[in-house]
Image (tube, rainbow, N blue to C red; front, side):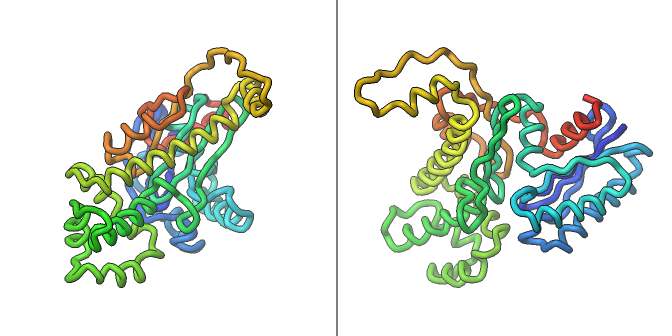
Length: 324
């Protein structure tokens, strides 16, 4: 049996074809299928087009399953029902699994082993699994949260530009990078750009790499932005650690703490928890990964992802079908 993995994120929808042994055969990308950006009909069109295109490549044979990891799934009754309808229509008679893209990223990044994954692409979210317990943190969307994501970094870049322009922060590489990218005749033109583009999370996220470039060039504002991004991502991990990884006796001690007479008892050594990552923000490499590793809770260990997220929902489907 062969496999088609679909990773539907906030920037793009990736389709990867896999052999029986999960060796990648081909891969292509279509625009985002996120319903908040594409609409429900747009989501359906992207998914159906992608599945038909994959089938027409002639690499999947007669028997194949589809793993869908879709951004926003499970976050609202109406939207989840619409996603289910679109996925069911796209899959046709083929067996499929449907999960939120953060679950797919966990399955692929950690090989379905206990641990935590951080997604920081257009948006941001973290997800952890410990035995039969799971927990997510973040993912509050572009307007309310998504700290450390591409959208958040893009906004922070524009804010830093204004502060460098009027002297509140020392002038650095951000000034010239933004002027060139946005073709500004004068700095105040950024106001019009923001009024027009701020609602377009993909456009704002596309500015995120300039934070990494400015940081590499020594811009202190950019370096502080990345340090804050790493801290925000680490705080999501810390919340999940408290929620599902903290030993019961340690949690009880923490809850009792505050009573003047008690002193903490020594906690038994607990195993280290792997934390992996996926998303465009991490393409900045050491500029974001080093401060993230330093900001993680003590028991956590930052590890490279085992597989691309496209594979994750296929692994989950294999398990559902009793094939793994």
